[in-house]
Image 1 (tube, rainbow, N blue to C red):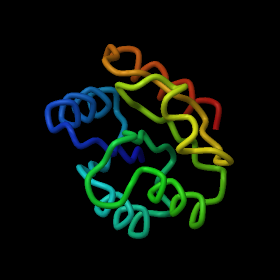
Image 2: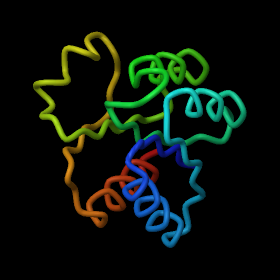
Image 3: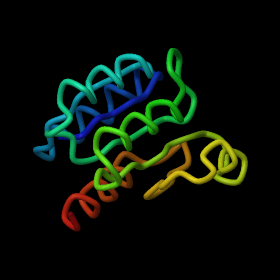
Image 4: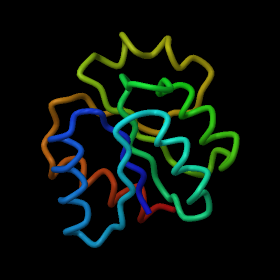
Length: 121
């Protein structure tokens, strides 16, 4: 199952729909609080997290901290942001981030990325 954490509703729906069309079950969270709730509820089922850097509620760093606390480092995390990786990198110092993709991205690129990560695990 993929946990998709994105506060831009149109992007959340578009990415979720595209991943579901490819056969992936998706949990959607529009804010950090809901993401943490879903992590706790579905901890054993989450195989990948797509995490936007800027979120309402709990920050993406807090979501990532909680994901690592309950799932260890086994669950791959892909960060997404309109800002460059250099600009956001210091916010995640010392944390394991598996990949970064900058917005705007093509939906096909995110699907391919997800497929690659899930095939490797």
